[in-house]
Length: 241
Image 1 (cartoon, rainbow, N blue to C red):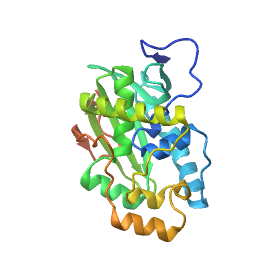
Image 2 (tube, rainbow, N blue to C red; image 1 turned 60 degrees about the vertical axis):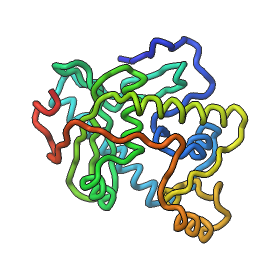
Image 3 (cartoon, rainbow, N blue to C red; image 1 turned 180 degrees about the horizontal axis):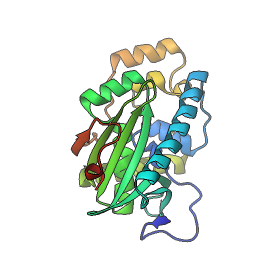
Image 4 (cartoon, helix red, strand yellow; image 1 turned 120 degrees about the horizontal axis):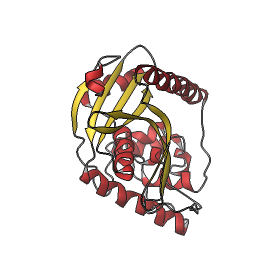
């Protein structure tokens, strides 16, 4: 099954925006669309491999519990310029629901449990909801270091839709001119796999982040609003109904 936005055409655009870039800085998203390389260390590669295995296991788990669940559902819309795949599309009593699954390390998981979803995770879910015009979604975050999951239920949010449209438009403009946007310095630069495109040395990166640790994108990030949260590894059917 595939979800095609009402503005989709048969002819593909040469470049499309991946939903996984939704919560990244403009410069990083532009580099990804222009095909810039990434400096991946062994720890990052291992985390990606673990995430892929857990991702498949989660999809199989939901498929076993809910036969109506569909995995890897294609999503495309030419006006948004977005192309990607939903982790899981689940039919519920109130209509279709998109489930976005993420894995993180133990320290980040603890932060998410205490403060709420990461902007990058929530932005991706909201982009899926906006492009598909589906009203309800779930963000599931799993701890790679030890057992544990947290589930956030959210709704399609007009404020996020407007923010995402503006950000994607800015990326597309940068790609069209092949000019990288200005840096959006924050603590996330310390874990970026393309940081060498923004700083001449590790010392320069560290100094810049110390002076400006908070991410302040333009426009500002909307509030993250979720209806319900569960800290159970397997919420009951009523949570997913």
